[in-house]
Length: 258
Image 1 (spheres, rainbow, N blue to C red):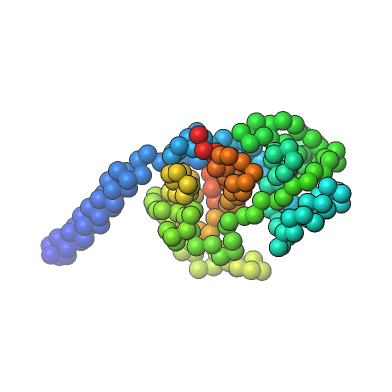
Image 2 (image 1 turned 180 degrees about the vertical axis):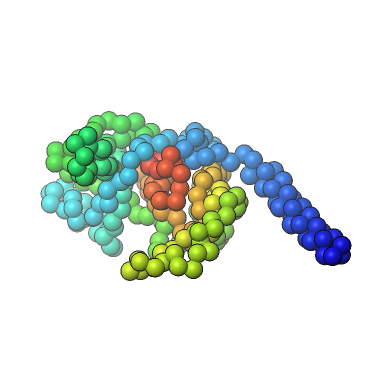
C-alpha cells in the first residue's frame, strides 16, 4: 500500500510540475499579448474598434442597380462576385458597414432585428449613421474575406493564425455520453475553456492579441485587407463574432499602419 501511495504521489508531482512549467513558459512568451477589445496599438499599427455590434452580410449584386456601379463593373471587370461584411466606396474612399441587433423590448414581445448603416473614413471615424432604407448606393467593392471555408487556424504558414491555446478550465459536460440526445443534429461541445493567442501578419510587424474562448475547431472571424492602390497606408479590418468568444470582443476592428 505504501508503494502505491509513493507511485501515486510521484505521478501527481510530475503532472503538477509539467503544468507549472507550461504555465511559466506561457507567461513568459505571451505576457505581452493584450485582449483584442483592449488593444490600441501593436507592431506599429493602430487598432480601433468601429462597432461592437454584429454585421449584416452584403451581397455583391445588391448595389448593381446604380449606373455608377455598373460602370465600375464595366471598367474593372471583376472575375467573381464577392459577398462580405465590408463595402468600400471607391469614389469617396470610405467604408460602409451594416450593423444588426435585436433591442430588448419592454412589452415582453420577441425583439425584431434592427439594421442601420455606418459610414466611416479610413481612420475609423464615423461620418454618418443611416437607416437601411435611406442608404444611397455608391460605386465600390465588397472587400474579399481572407478566411476561407475549412480555414486551418493552427497553420503557422498562413498570414493569420492561432499561435497557441492555453487550457484553463475543463468542460466536464463534454464527457456526458447522452448530451446529444434530443437534438436532430446531435450536440457538439468543447472540452476546454481558455485563452487563444493570435498573430496577424502585416507588412511591417505582426499584430498580436488574445481572446478568451474555447478550443473549437474554427473561429467566427473575418479578415479584410484594403487593396493598396486605394490607400497609402496598409489597412485591414477584422470582424469578430464567435459565440464561444467573450462577448466583449464582438465587433469590427480597423487596423492601420502608423
